[in-house]
Structures are given as C-alpha cells and as structure tokens.
Image (cartoon, rainbow, N blue to C red; front, top):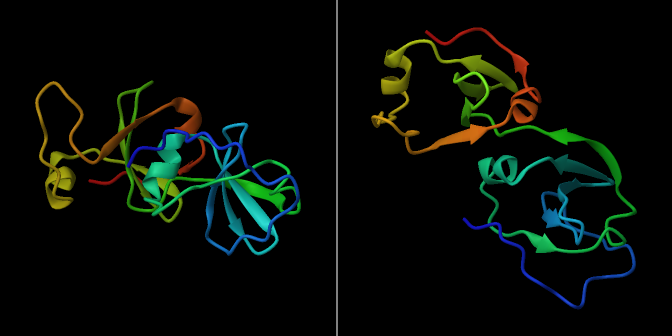
Length: 140
C-alpha cells in the first residue's frame, strides 16, 4: 500500500466526528487513529503500514482538534521489524519486541530468508521506532 499524500484543497476547517478506528493524515503529515474522544499518533509511515489500513482519510489539524492525543501507537502485534541500528530482528508480541535469536523461529513464521537483502514481510525500522516497544523475552 502506498501512503503517498494526495493533495486536497478542501480540507475541513472545523472539528469533525470520525468513526472509531479511522486512520487519518493531517496536512502537517501526522498520522492518527481515532477512538471515541481520543487520537493515537503513529510516528512513521512504517508504523501505519503495520496496521494495513484499508484507507487513510486526508484531513486537517482543525478537524481532529476535538480529539485529545492519548498516546503513540506502536507496531501491530505480529509485525516483524529489523532494527537498522543494531541489526537485530524482532517480532512484536503483546506490545513488546522479542528478539529473534534462532533461524528456526524464522522458519516457523514462514519467512523465506534471502541472501544479502531483507526478507519479504520484514520492515526495516529506526531506533526511535524500536524504542516504542518494551523489550520482551528472546524468541528461540
């Protein structure tokens, strides 16, 4: 899914009521998921991609101003992320990052390792993105 921004000249200028679970992108490039009276910030497009949204609504900061910012959203459980800064592969489970320490785990997860490149289905992420998740037990 491409998350490239579509230009729109008619963004709302007043607060808007969005259904819970709606993914939003504002004119400032911020991504949110709304839930009742709150909005959860997704810090990068990679975090958004982990949730596989069917659509992302282009909106304005004014339109989401009625929702208080509750927290930063993490990667979805089941996401495989590769930390560019330390070269470690992690599986997100119960909101924690679990270091994959055995090729047997990779095989159990149905990942086909490719020599000299990142396997399909694994996201390369930054240290800031990794640090959203508390460290869990290693996966062996």
